[in-house]
Image (tube, rainbow, N blue to C red; front, side):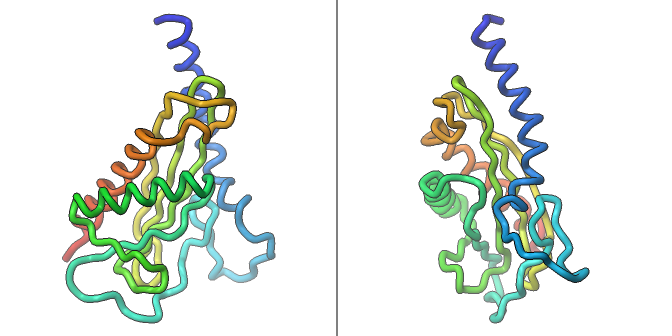
Length: 183
């Protein structure tokens, strides 16, 4: 193992540990500063509410549909690129997406991201929470993706192939879970 690959392994290892520690703090840091009162404000593992408001209109019966809520923790341009890639991948994979926030969906997905790294690379850690129509969290999955480039800002190298991998992994994991969850 060369000096460069040894440094890369050290950055990745350190980034993994830091990402796990930061992941729980991210949504809380980005959320409102209001004091929440009551037992009904139970918090999820990521620091966000464990429930979403229930849908006002029931989702259509039949093939399950999925709505991605706005992502947290990443730059808007990166979030938009990942979301566009998720839409394209979902279409190829046959995962039915609802594209408007005000329309009902069988499942709503909330995604949180953290990027850590340095001059050589970044590690993006992600968490997706899946909520049913009643607003109850029914599934959570996490993962990480290595971006082989960075420029001091860990998000600077998160583009193109990294975003494609993030989208592919999200669609595959959600499709596998939704398919398993079908009656």
